[in-house]
Length: 247
Image (cartoon, rainbow, N blue to C red; front, side, top):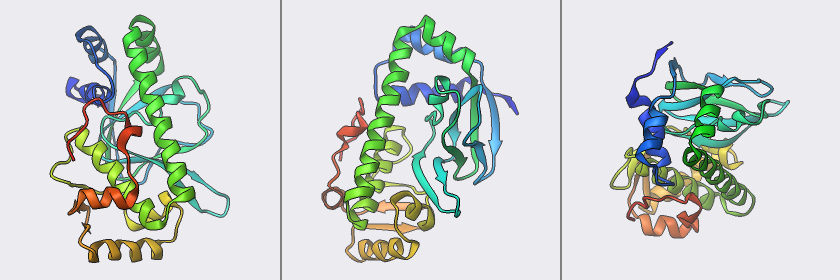
């Protein structure tokens, strides 16, 4: 573990600036946060259900995900996170974790002590508003995931998930020209949308055959964005992005 550089914490600023305007004073205050960098391999728990953490983690590199594990070993992925996200921000005010947070790929994380975050929010109401807005956007994404799992077809679930992740990556400068990294395996996709791995494979083949997308290795290429969003019934309004990427 080592001290993180200023470039690391700047990812948090970049993320917040996708959903709200940050002043220069607020930016400087965030940059002064004490953070510690840590490397994790893929599929390692960052914090577990029942833990009482004293710090939050900022994702610097790699992907992470929240999940619940049932007694019989079945896994439900609750959300997927990319660089710039603080996926356990709620631990700042909810002392006991009610789910697990794990690395999906090899990750670089910057851990921020709760005390430092609380001091920051007490002294900078604008930062408090930014973090509050971030949690509200997080809740909006949860609502969309609930609708996705409960009411859309498997094709709609997969295409909606891909549209969401692409726009989040593009807003952070991690995707362009409708091409992006896709760290989710078919098994991960199945656990995120509540269907079998076999069903995911069949629908991906269908989408590829229709010329809508290509998913090869860890790369997603969307060939027809307008048609994909139509199939997904995708309206990006729930992401509440200040900087809306062009379709």
